[in-house]
Length: 466
Image (cartoon, one colour):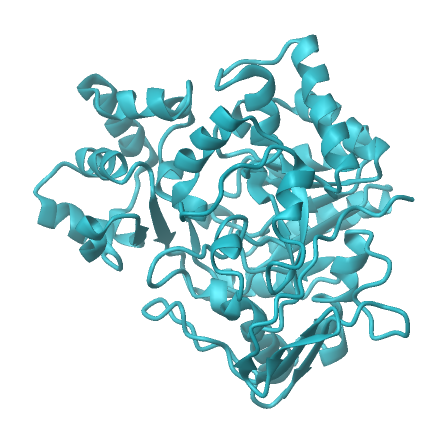
């Protein structure tokens, strides 16, 4: 329910790391960052800007509409895909990279893009409110956009504005948007990032339960790891992206701007030891993959901000990172509380770039079953499977998927409960999971006795017309 396969699935359609976890369908377009609907010039800007998140492979970058984009997956990849319209393409299509509130005409233009995208098969709208240009939007703008989603019985999926010291305010905003727009809400990768709020997952979940009692249809997705991952540019202040990739590159080349960025990092008290470089686009900097930032900065002989800015410029923004969080008892308990909640679905949130991505990419689903169903017995096998199958299918309004039932699409996983486990680690992020030997996608055997058959039976799961 939170995949980052929007581009690499087209470049590597076997999708073996996901198939071997038993994943047969993925929701794309998350975090308000993806590639349709889009004009050709904007697609090239996004290709560059988002390369640290999705990669930049040599594929045919020539679609425009949501329908065009979804057609690239039909019968051409190993898994099914559903798609969320990302907030970034709405803002950029209507008003460019400007950091301001939209006019009434610009809101109408964004709503028109939503209407067309959902008619083309998108299942909802996503936002990533800590990523520019999404972060430039206020609540009122989002409510108006979600009203267009609601008219098509779609879903609002949000990477909230804050998961750290202001997580309670951010959750309140997400619930308020759902309430005022009368749209179902799904909170992306719900976790608590602030030391000040650790141990308070119960309070977060109580707010969600209260909203559900009051009629706001709120659900969540989460992955069973403490640490996170994303593009390097997300560490920068959001004003740095105003104007788009060219303007951003010019800022990063400017010494005055670099001093402003350095001040921003000092204020944030950023810990360079708690972050590693997981992927770079070029061979020239491949040696940096797997290094912590403090070591890479020390070896470079540069100031931290000079190192980051130079690296982003050298790599044309194609740099990914892993940021490590604590593994103290409170953090582990918070994740367990969220992951075992009845309204939570399992996700990977996994980048598919670099030699050793975050282990969640190739391990999340198998780890979830091993840890919470087999070892801790925190929930039954039936409940664990429900959170991966029927609950997501119902959330996406896919009426013939998610259950073993006559007449339903045969997306079927045969697993061994005693063997299912992740093998991916932070040192070896591309190690395949074990214990899942047979996977059918739309009735076609895709994994047979642990061997990928090369079948591409995936389909675009377009929104069902009700």
